[in-house]
Length: 507
Ligand code: 3SK
Image (tube, rainbow, N blue to C red; front, side):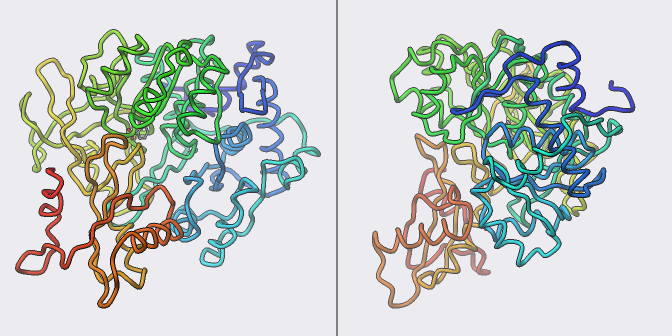
């Protein structure tokens, strides 16, 4: 339970300063090192700018666009401290993909890394309600210039525990992205549930990882959990396996948050010495195969902590602490959350019977103004879209996605969105996109394409289609496999048979 008046930034940051921890290390990047005190001062200056110069009032939604940097963390916390609502979108989104979040969240103000301005400026032509974009991320960016004149103190907005402070967007297979609303108390709840009971980090820990701060997996793992225990965190803008490996060794990181694809890539570097400082390794965002768990555990001596979370629930809701891991299973529900398996009518399935994974808990699930609320939340249970089996001991075992979402290297990608992008290429007559198994990325986006009459298929067309998709939508969504077919498999009534396509890959 939390007090009626609650501002999560007061809890996570101001109370640390009051405790006398201002001089302790807080945020690192490859070029910067901020103490708790320095973060608190930047948060206050940004909050002063938001309210005093940019006219933000409590409840306003502020779009945040940036890579994982200390300034991005400061911007998040400043919006929430001032009573605003942080609206996070993946930094790689293209202009066309930014319009819906801006419109849906009714965003009039954005703080944007100066290197990502172009797509946002373009998006604004189709989203005129976005009245003001303020750049940040360099000494002469607009936000930094205003911060220089702003007061270093700021009295936090007196928010209620159930005031919304964060809108997280999650991809939908039909009907486009949905915005999930989270309260100030939800931010504390993930620290008090997963953080306290499963992760069990301490002030001496140093966090590191790859998920973007715009994804709540990254926000929790790299900001909320470390701040909640007074630890420090390393923020990386480039998170390829070599970048990650080098940074783990350089900063002697102890807690790693990333997806199975990255764990496999780190193992492939064959540099166990670089991983020696780690003591907690959390894997989520996609299914963790037993082979990856085993290989990681053998090489590092640290059991890989699998977990499943959702933007709807803010963070991980099933996942076991190191001493209770059952290899191959995702784990048990995080204390504070309940999970169960139900059939398509919502009736409980007995242990051992596969069915739909549903969850409920303190943090979700509330969609912003979305008719899909009643489809995905029934009787208070959030339908996750995953098929699982529970065993008699309450461990949950992943089987498959129940919908058409493709989970690749930790990214959720909606096949229909890739299909729409491909269909705008003049060489495509018809197409269908599914996920197919891949040893490195778990699944890869695979497109089956019927070429337009007279078009020559081959490698050049594959490259052209891939480049075309990367230019339309976030590049991580492009189809890594493309197969050309004379026709797509259809039912007699003309409906696409995705099952027949999946069968080609044995799934
Ligand atoms: O498992 C996930 O995909 C996830 C989503 C949102 C937040 C946290 C996690 C682990």
